[in-house]
Image 1 (cartoon, rainbow, N blue to C red):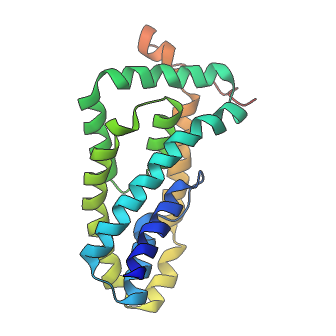
Image 2: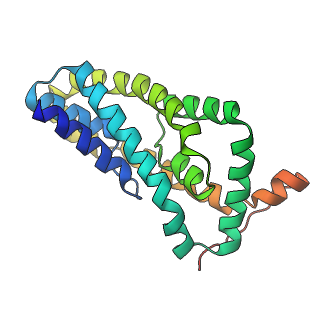
Length: 196
């Protein structure tokens, strides 16, 4: 039973950190293999831990962004957040499909947190999408993890590095777009001077 608590806590921790870290499904595979845990119970513990981690992250990231990003850029992202808060179903649908893709969820919750999007508009969709995508990843990970050589080769690969780079690029693209100009004037304008 305590191993399932570890799955929950570890999944929460990796999804609370503000940098691109290991995905929660890797943590789930590790504990599942290490302690011979039931895959479905691992998912039932790990996915809510991951969701709680992302919820906490979305609550503290605005304070972090206020310290490192210019006030006008924070206001720009908050403007986008206000637009997303008005159309809950579109936000929920986007969050669901986003979590089905093999993309890090850090950019999604960074944008939601800085934009002050109500996290409860995203969390249910995140839980559903994350359970589906993590079920695929944990099941595949269980198969691959039985071969220790495959694990070591898969941790640092071009895929894991490209996923980390893609996650960082998505956050940067979101931050560098002048959202007010795009949404109000329908013109794409980039603003690179966002740091304090």
